[in-house]
Length: 116
Figure 1 (cartoon, one colour):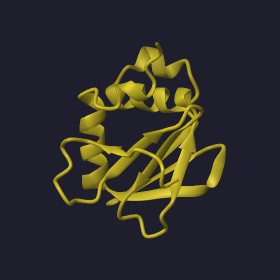
Figure 2 (cartoon, one colour):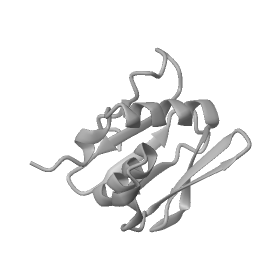
Figure 3 (cartoon, helix red, strand yellow):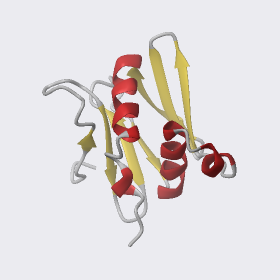
Figure 4 (cartoon, helix red, strand yellow):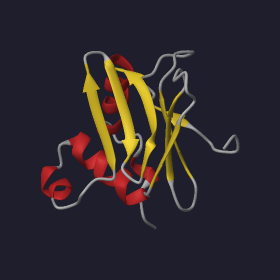
């Protein structure tokens, strides 16, 4: 998947490892540049949309749709996985996740699910 064009939040400092998102015609990919496993989560655009809506607090929209992306937080560790591929888990820390969420709330990743 080296051909993917990865994007991270503009709030992520230069040279810092961060949560990255990329898209193909059929899927959205999420990774973390410092994840020692090098895991790349693959999800549907609809699952990514539901995640973004939940992170933005758009409850009315997100509650009616089951998300295919699960996020668990345990102290300072954040794990992201797709329910369709439970063996692939992207791991990051709370600071990097919070930076990603701020970028989501600022609309930086909305183009990944925008429909023409």
